[in-house]
Length: 337
Image 1: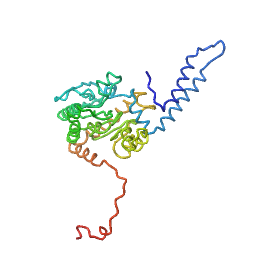
Image 2: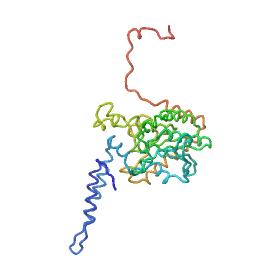
Image 3: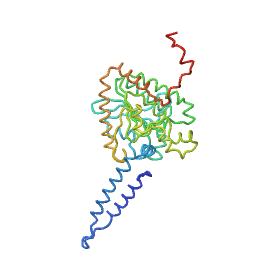
Image 4: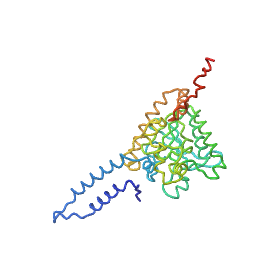
């Protein structure tokens, strides 16, 4: 079953016309041929597709990031990595299927993979908890990352989650503490870490596996402290303001790159990653190898410093500094007193 977004309707209508025309039987005896009409519609589809996807709004990019056919972590592992061996459990409570991870090979590099995983249909989504991890998911992720640090394996994380699971059970098992520990411990791992936002990058649930030397993002992914719907409900008291909230949050790949929150944007095929997963994986693989090679050249101490300085530099302020009062302006500086 195909899934089409609202802004794709002009393309879908043209494709429907094209399919109807192709189903028409050719009547050569009557001299009827539809090749010219088919060619015109095909060119019109490509032109419309370029126009639509060249002018996407922030909210439309959020919709693409949530597309149910978009590649997930296991798809990237299948198409871009070799010898994946999945590891399970946090050795404390249970195995959270919303987080997957294990040993793999990226060309000649042995690596540790950790990522959030959504499901394709209802049954799998329930199994994967719609990609929202419990505390045991983050503790499993940390266990695998510590294992990678022990054996000097680079770590690559795939982020695609609306956020950590906010249920009562997760709170009882200390979800905030689990994420906080990951933030602290990932700062101390000496091996290279690369994080990739491949779909949704929601709040602390994303940041719990997102502390890295390099943070990459796919062209139509987003990374945000809150969902546009949540922001609209809090600031505007109206979920219909979701599109306005998506623009105000500056959560698209281009905004994040300008703000210095990501290091590189990985291009997607026209129409989104779900239209050509192999091409998307190929582009991501090339970028991963480039950054991994650069980080491996740094000594462990330099990697730690670079990672720490990177996250300490986060934050932009637009408000001007408050003007000094007359008393502050006339009083001498401390060193002059």
